[in-house]
Length: 253
Ligand SMILES: [Ca+2]
Ligand SMILES: [Ca+2]
Ligand SMILES: [Ca+2]
Image (cartoon, protein in one colour):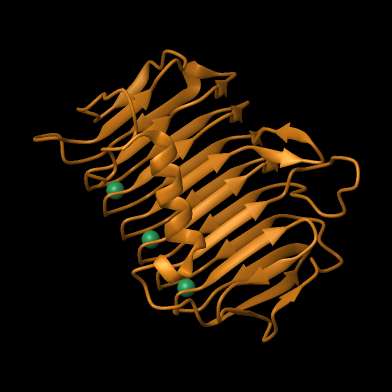
């Protein structure tokens, strides 16, 4: 399977509910502003939401504050905190930062906890001015990061401050393309046969401060790392498999 097919597979998993092996997404996601932080909190059902500069939208039968969607609330001056709790959750965030015509963006930190369950997180054209902290906890989780076209221009994702990922137990995949990591990067894929995948032109402005840890197991096929054409990393530990493409890593056969 080439990378385009693998991307289509991710889209099919997250986007096309008819093809999803999972039950239809449900539950309610509560959005509130607490001490200036935007809190987006799921429940223990399979929640499916998209967060953009214009809307926070529930897909399929997932509701937002009991309704179909809401505009980003006023009064957000702090961080954006997403906590999806249990269930097989899908979250897409598209917040391209302070571009012309943007009325809502990440102002400080972005913190996302996907909780137990097999989760998919997509960060498309996201710009985070300060820290990014992602924890997908147990389960077979996928994190996919890429740019996208906005107003005819391709906008790359950019993480200015420290970027931290923990994917916990389960066979997890972190795939990123066209992404700019300006600061420290600390990726820990936890136990399970995991994969980290850089397929396109990502940039690490501090590659000596980028750590990728595949975790256990360290026997057999082991954890896979793909950095085709990418920078030379010095801190890649607990990876055993270095294939040319991402189609057979992170629990994908
Ligand atoms: Ca949930
Ligand atoms: Ca999970
Ligand atoms: Ca893992």
